[in-house]
Image (cartoon, rainbow, N blue to C red; front, top):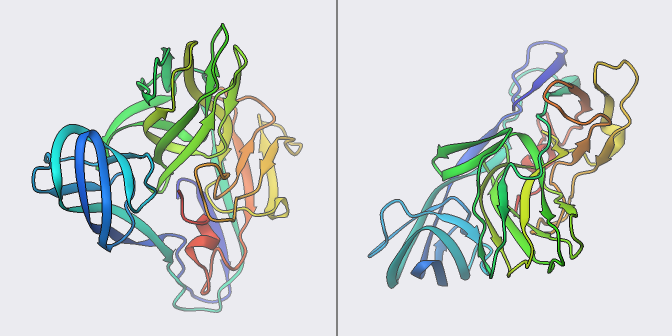
Length: 324
């Protein structure tokens, strides 16, 4: 967890908000042409995930999945990191960790109360700090470029753009008469879980469309077709919460901009249905009442229910449904 948490216990107790991890491995029949992996049969193991490394006869060493195309974990097509040709064969995917349930308390009567203190100072949003101006002529990949508040980093999942804090991204159309297109953003949340979102750009010039999911790292962006006009991609002030908040009543307090009064920002509750590329954030989001500028601090006190912490806590209760 990136922020802080305070507990009150009656007697000694051991508790953890962190989660266990397990490897995600799969065996499947697949082939690769250019940067497209085609999976024709799942043979055993887990679902395929963005970030998994692919091995098999004829597969370039270090190849990993960068984005879903028609596949969403099973048969279908995926984008991989290296252009190559590999005939249909048995392939193996491995290396991406899945979150487990929070570790339970082993001693004591448990918490009389738990307040999670979320404390962030986001950088100013920018319309072009993920992808600078470009005009896609056809379906394909968007070139990613790290701008203000964004860093290019190399991880076990390859080279990704890492945002300053988990936050939603936007697609902005330029001057002219744009054609609305779907932009599929793929990457990871703060806990390293792969996620994707489809953002439909506007058919109106000079208009930004904001996504709903809070990304921490972005590995790729694919566009469904030519946009006619220039587009950019950047960050928003839609900030991702660190734990699942399903109702505003669980927010004990929220302050920003060094103001004692409660902040009048915009809260969106966690999406609790099965996640897809069009559903909302699995933990919820908040837009502070004062625009982020790298100076304004937002502090939120979040009341955690028993499903999020304690002997009966679950991963879903603490961190939301599995990302998609």
